[in-house]
Length: 245
Image 1 (cartoon, rainbow, N blue to C red):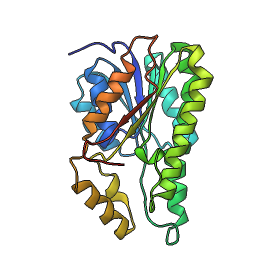
Image 2 (cartoon, helix red, strand yellow):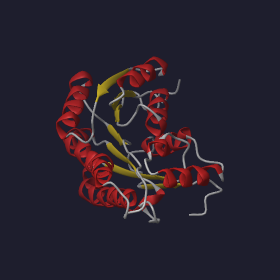
Image 3 (cartoon, helix red, strand yellow):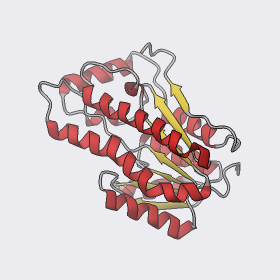
Image 4 (cartoon, rainbow, N blue to C red):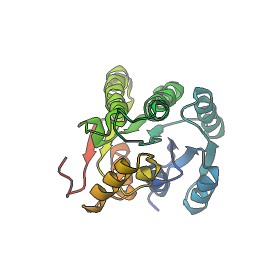
């Protein structure tokens, strides 16, 4: 097993499935100690059994700042430091604005945008001490808005803006900020869409191409956080070859 990240301590949010799960496993295989956060702790426990390295399972709701702070505190209490945070937790509830349930907008803002901010806020004092890294998992929807995805895109545009401002604040203190923007990835995100027309459209689009796999994005994260300290990979845009936008 490679030990390129030994003995780094990493916190991955939204680690129970998809990109978060694949990233946690990839980081563990690279030698990191990994704390995995999420609400489906049974899945996190299963991940811990599969990972080659030490895993700390955290019952974590990123939309609750107290839950986030508790998860960060538990990680630092257990391992003495925190070197890398991967902000991956997110939901995609697409559909036209006119027929939308505003409660779904609130869920996306609280999870995708505020959840990322809460995690950075709680982790940043530790990352400044360790001269660590923040990885923000965004989306191509954070670069190009599309009809039917107005609020989802708004949250991802927000993630991008927050990442760039954060980078400017902390880069001279040795903290690297990485923005990863995946295109279509084969995950369960689309399964949570409640608008049937939008859900069908997303699945049809995904079926029209060779989608990325979660492991493809995990590899990008590992690449970014294993560069020499003087190298900051600030942005990685990863689309399927077949995706035009």
